[in-house]
Length: 311
Figure 1 (spheres, rainbow, N blue to C red):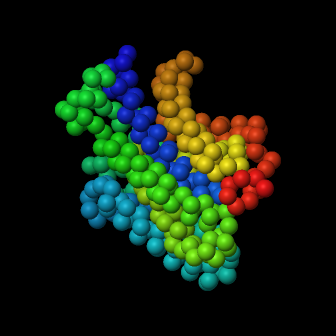
Figure 2: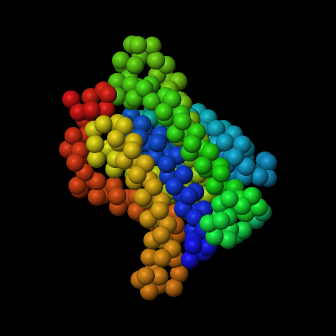
């Protein structure tokens, strides 16, 4: 039993956990800034950038993917401003039009491109391939200290772990500036903090998390993890540090429980096959948010003062 778990379940669960944490951490500050849909927008924008990067380089390595996503984000900003000015419509409407169009363009590029050499297609873009990221060389828990077996780990695991650790370190290092600019932007400007640069860094961090997670878990989990765990955590407390801790706990719970229910839930109910792990992780995170909306102790006190505590 232990050998089967290490070989077939350990690495997908760990990848899901790291992806969930990497998205949930910046998601906390996006929620506080009332910019939660930026996570949704990023997941839409990165798709055409990643596809174009693959068509140019022939690889889905992290470097070209990040450059492609950055280029797509720049194109999106220009298009949003163009649509807003020419159409004389509000920024939210312009964003909706551009993000939807870019995502549709990415899907069309995928459909018309030869991606047979890599795991990159429409279903993969939406749902990822979490179930397939197994550790074939593993032979029980002893493989964790076996250099030969470790060399055969799915590359998505170390990549996602590194990105998650970097985002955690950045969150700790820039905790105070992020906290001040999220709760009281005017005060942050008054004391000389580079508010616009901090906001840009937050969005860049969220984009990096989305790109790193995209190959393994697809856009469904990325969207869900940016919003659901932080939003549920926001309903549990009025202290920012506690909120971040809750969001990490909810993200981990969603990844683990979602993967287990996707693999074994249908079988327990008598079905012949499992369901999408990404879809189930997103569904579990949604259920957690629903429960927080119904029973969260801070659901009636979401307006807070600077510092993360209720006045």
